[in-house]
Length: 345
Image (cartoon, rainbow, N blue to C red):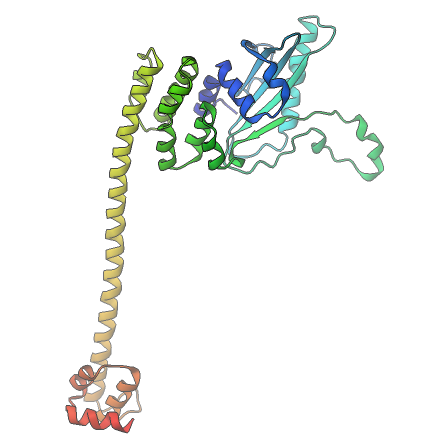
């Protein structure tokens, strides 16, 4: 699995410890999170990862400080189109590699806690077991050995299991990111409009709002919505400048998408009109064909092989629901004849 544009964008996002802080505080319901000093958070160089693991790059490792201890956080960013059933095994391998590094290079006598966190933002339902034990098939006769199976589990944050209402109620940067990717055009524009409110909320944390806006502009650029974003991003220096750029971009998108909607509506109208025109033409053609067929039958003195007079034809047409004018036109009967015929029915 090579690193994708999507992976790079999220790695950039969570390279900011304050974005990691939001992720943990919003989606990890554990008390220890509030004791972490995120101003001292350190990202760990993964140069220790051996060749077997180098293909997996969409992850981040943090060393986090509590008051009198430390914890390592291993964050795996998963965006694959298919769900990896053996993700627990894969994450366990990473954690073991980290522990191997701590044992042999840092000469630790006791190992610190490693918290394995999975962030899944794909479209499919997450069905993989969250524990290593869930991958092991233990026959009934071997139940006594369950205690010898490695006990390992990861903490899942599955974005597609969160409702849009839930995300909208969370007025922070990380929920804004998830909303942008989870909704349609209307939700996207509505979500980006929240930046004005977030600018006030994060007035004392410009690096957070700056990271968010940079991510959004990068998202727009990589999704082909604003071609010049990459060039502009390199020239921006403050969140206010970035916000101004984002605002202009979104306003232009609104105009573009409105025009796209109008064009799409016109196209659908043309297609519908054509279909209705064809249908109406067929109906008229069939009706005309029936009339010609009946007239030909009269001329031959035969209608459907059974009817031998124009009175019988008129009677049959009345029963089929034809109007009087059509019948009189085809059979050449007069109004008094039609009146008499209707009284006989």
